[in-house]
Length: 281
Image (cartoon, rainbow, N blue to C red; front, side, top):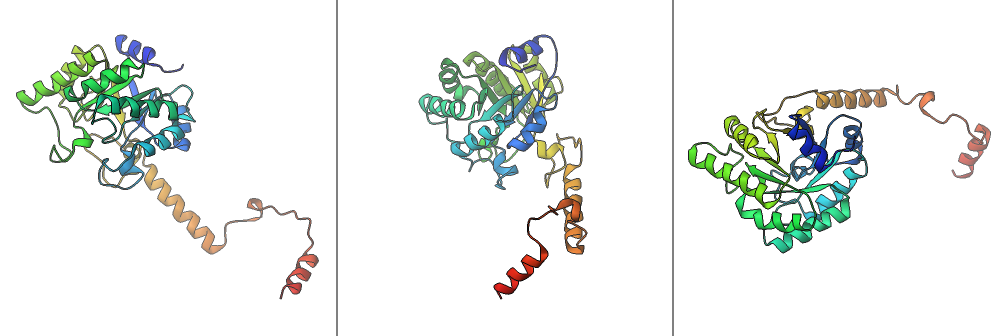
């Protein structure tokens, strides 16, 4: 079944959990599309996972469009959300609308995601007024990593809990159909989920959230460091290293390639090739 805004909201209303995973390329997106996962996030986390930066800030709008377009080409039923990168929406609602429009037009994605609470509600209103679905993102917002003093849990203590709770209400009122809660304490994220009519997507939050999202390299054991909130579902990173080493070993021992891996038939005889070599001495 094709996943849409309406089918996903219906899952929330029915108490069904929703799965989301990051993805940045066509090959991986084909595998996700063949699975039962509902949503893909083409996250600006690609700055760290695909480009090797220490945070997400250097990622550009053009880069998000290239990666998003590659993922969308593999997806028929999976709902694809593309992140709006740092400084592609913060300046004004007009800038946000133009950036979101480019993402939708040039990638074919189903929605955009942007970080922030009350302060970005004018941007959310502008984007949704144009008919573009929006996923909000509150709590620990990676684009604000320097202002937050690092990747830290948000919503600890009553004052901070109130701030995150009010941000959740604000983005819902502004028109977002879903909100990501990152590194938000379980009781707070559970309360937000119960209060909101829109979908809550947890990452380092409560299992009571309507949906969960993980970075695929993290959950497959491909990242150098694994955050506390990640479960390793398969150690694909170790399997890949083993396969690379086996390939290296067979190349150097000449065990690969064998005749079955080559095109053995030729229209040229050995005698002709010997003569050719002699001609070009």
